[in-house]
Image (cartoon, rainbow, N blue to C red; front, side, top):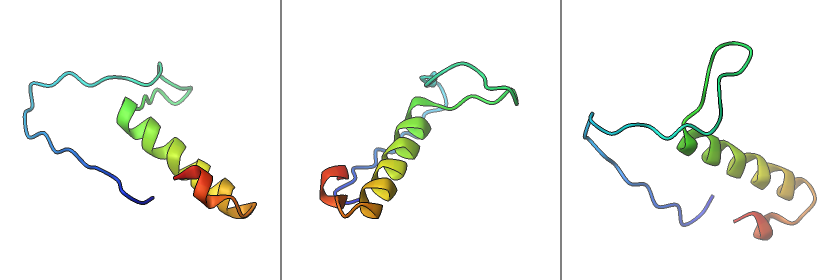
Length: 56
């Protein structure tokens, strides 16, 4: 991924935003984790079909 802006927040008072409910293993992902994972998968798929510029 290029041109990724990372914002750090050292405050422990922040309530996380959840991407979805718990999965069958009882895990849930924050919205940030979910979006980063989705972006990585999109980039990997796009690269496999020579369309990586579209996934940026």
